[in-house]
Image (cartoon, rainbow, N blue to C red; front, side, top):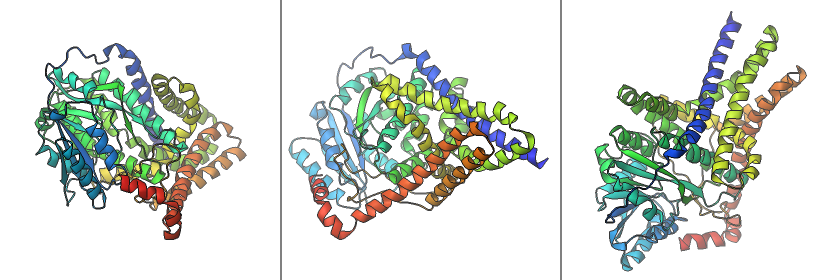
Length: 506
């Protein structure tokens, strides 16, 4: 009886994972079904409005000058721009930002350096504080790792000729996509979100979200929704849903790109993913009851549920990982045929669904998409490798454990010759890396167990798990050690001349 109870729990988790993975098929369907519903600019504003550009920064010494310069170089009448550098920094970033702001003010820009010393509310608090002094009818936001294109404002502002439009979001592109194997995989993961998910949701009439940067808000849409809150780690997701609940229309421009710098070290990447995962569950707890009680169409409610709770799949995958071996042992007693007609179809459909989802994103965005197929197996492994860290994020959100907003380190890495190891900042390593290593060993044992029992059909799936956990764990350790070596004063003296020049230039 206990055996069948265990298998029932195992299959419940497997089916839940299958449902979330299969939802990607539905996203692909919506994407292709609603191509004809792509936003089209029907009229232009008769008079260009004043825009406030907010640049939230926190300890960004390597990129703050690049950010401010890009904002001031936007192709928009200088007299209609109000630029705010929202600086919560505690290091030399403040001096660098203040100097850069001073230089542009002398050149006639209406630009202000707003420095806070308490960092209350983190990024959401900084944006809310800046909004008090904003002069613009519209608010554009760019994070420190972005370099907006000169025509970004001109390409987006005219969509607000429709008075119902509250926010326009552009698609992220990546300055350092080709920097490393890790950045190439990250770029594909982000492409899936932007190229397929955002497009499918927006063009089909579902809710989608502002991504915290590279977009423009109508100030009224922010204020009528209650302004920026900081009770979640994803203040952008939270405000997006509150604003759309108020009836504001959002627009996603798939073909308008905003270049960004993605994390080059695994620990910074894990920290970023942890923040996003935790924030989405916090937002789900906060807003899903309100959404489900609303008069919104059923299709909007269902998609909101999948969107806001999607990171629960990480916790389900972790539980599934732990239960793999007991489930295989149990099958010895009831026969392997049941696995061939249950587990394998579920896992196969889920795996193919994820791969197909990212394949479509590459095909829709790049001419050389076929050359990117090589990375799909490792992309799945990396996603599995993140289950430990992201499961912790989900549990923290569920049990209301409060943590600070941990920024993602930026080093101004734009091409392969740029180095990060000798620079300050960095994502910290946690005790979870031990759990990741143990899971890698655990799956190596499962592969051996499957082999000696001639269960060859399960080995490819088990290998995806093993590679994912080992890759994330070993890269976490190696990069921390590598950065530690370059932090040695003697080595740093001989190897970081260029880094010091970068800091001075920034």
